[in-house]
Image (cartoon, rainbow, N blue to C red):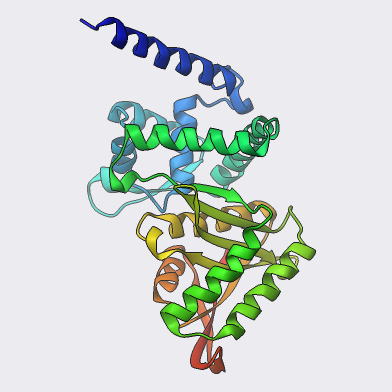
Length: 308
């Protein structure tokens, strides 16, 4: 039996659940104007945002009945939304990916969800938005305090972010690689050009936040009509190993496809091993390299590309 205090707490949680699900509209039959159920949309989201996940991993992480997941995946295959890449004779080890049709179907749904949440947040004052996000983060941390599930937030840039980006690139690369202030000056030029010529339809800066502090960043800027350029990718040392870097690169690629780019290019240095590993993981290939002297050091510059 619950005591009165526990019954009151239970009622409060259930009341909040009813309020929130109604407020964001997920119970409506026409949610996001999709023929898919909420559960099916969540599975499609996981496939879109993960690097070739297995069905077993999705079932475990979402706590889904294997039979339900199997039926959902079969539906996706019938609609040509997903493809499978077998790793072994065990079908459960198949790697799942969105097809071009799946990407075309998913992108409008995700954009609709972004607009819906954006409209909700637009009604709030800045201090209210911060309070809301902090409260949501606290709920997630309290209910799942394991280090592997430490929550972080990915958002678009805001006033003041460019100063942090310039400062942290200068300080961190001096600390880890000994680069001099000329690198900080180059970052400042890139950031200034981005703000002065920002095209929101084809360019984006993402900021990662953890525990209320900035933990990383990445940019996608327009190089040509068909080519986007990944720039200023950084993850704070204290936030490494949480999947933030992987998520930032994935967001960059997703946006580039939606913006209509045919290719992403980037310029990096051979000593930046962690970043190069992520680029390889996401399908980038090195196409050129050359020796040069910059930022007080002899370096090997590399150009990498990803065809979309």
